[in-house]
Length: 499
Image 1 (cartoon, rainbow, N blue to C red):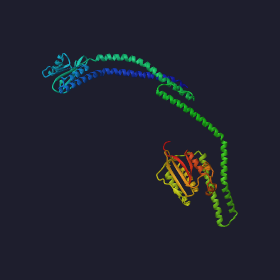
Image 2: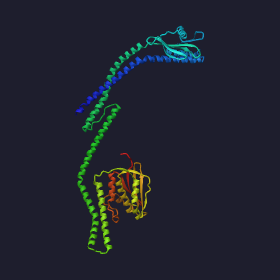
Image 3: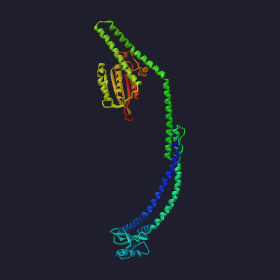
Image 4: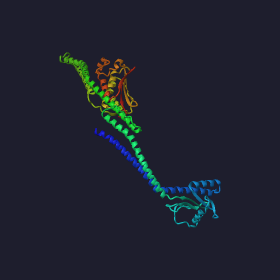
């Protein structure tokens, strides 16, 4: 509980960190503004003035080239440009007098243009840009009031001067920075209060979430998150509520599982009864072959028939019955391992088509002996996930069952169908359908639909029980379908690579 007691302190530390971080952001932003004013404002101001002079020059040069300098529309627009950008201009005609000017007293502009032509301009000027047609310079320096001007020749030969006043900015920059600093301090104080309020709004739902998690750790799932207005915190709170519900559901499932375990313990006597029934069924199945073996063995001992043919017949009966008992015992052992063993079923991806072709090739003589027409047209590989050895057992039981019950046209057809998320394998044989009352019981141990016929081919009624145990151990579907002309046994396997 010591860690839980520290949580409110962590919340307060979040508030402090948020306040410090936002305050630092404001201070950095303020310092950046002051530095920008100090180092870049003058250059930015001069650049904008230069752009204004260039635009005026271009407009004037275009009008001169088009002989439109005396038009009313030109004069009106030129006056507008000069008023907006605080620009003065003077264009000298070929007679040395003013051809165009935007000021009433143009003597000063005329004098500056003469000085430019004669090369008698003051030395204290700064040239910002120079081309073949004009020179842009700043007179008076950047520290005091002066003029930024363009002097040169238009494309048609007229001399011109365009200038605009440039205010000294250094004192203005210092004043602006002082104002920014005073305003910044005030904003910083207001911001700190606002951040405290904002951080409280954020930290309170976080504290509620911390208390919620503390109660959840004590397995108290009645508390739910209800606070918070920010989408992210509400999103987290909703997920905490979902987690609480899932944990409660999981504990409920565990309690249910515990009850199931208790019920399983209570059903121990029922399982013992099932074992007794199993032993009774085994005893019944072995009673007849054991009696036959004993009877024919006693006949051999007492020499009831001395001829060699009778002795061979007696021996064949004994061997046949012993073989049936051996097969029954092996099947029972296999079934016992599947139903009660702790064997881990290893899943692997293999080619069903290849496995079936190999099995059918080895069983070819059985089909020929029974004169059965086998149909299996699949040639392309079809991959599935299962235990390959156990699936061979399943298919062997299905195919053997089909061989033992095939009738009529004597056709056995094996199919592989690819479905969207699984593979379905079917083994069909022509013959009599299984009676409806027997369909649900054919998977039970020792159950036989036609006991006389089962006895004829030596069946024990365990094969389909083995199929059931194998398929359920891999959690796959299986079953049987009746048709008018026969029966199809089928099973399904996963063919996806996802877990």
